[in-house]
Image (cartoon, rainbow, N blue to C red; front, side):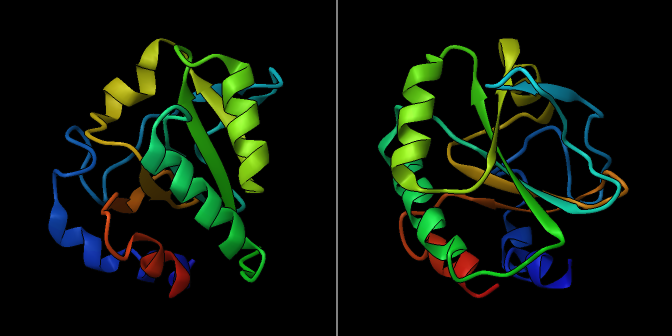
Length: 156
């Protein structure tokens, strides 16, 4: 968990730029979202840290981050971390599946029906990454930046 939290520690100075309704150190909503395969997936896992990525498959920056994350995952070994991609139910599932498949990224995709989690957290921009520990506390987040975004992930 330490290495995952470390790569977003510099983003902590950007309070309010990612999630307007939840501060670092706060408990995230205990929600269970259904995946595109209709399997339930909780945002909090008692065994592993969760890195979650809010993204829009129809947005260029989100697609770029998914592709870069797919490349980085091939060289990363962080067994205590699970990755979840969160998409709105407004995006057709076939579009999401095509983008994720072509990116070669390894993450579970869940659908935020009615943008409930998006609203509860107060997500301000796509893509954005958050880190939740095993107790359900938001430990860090990283807003998208056009310059050196994936460099922060690479330092893991």
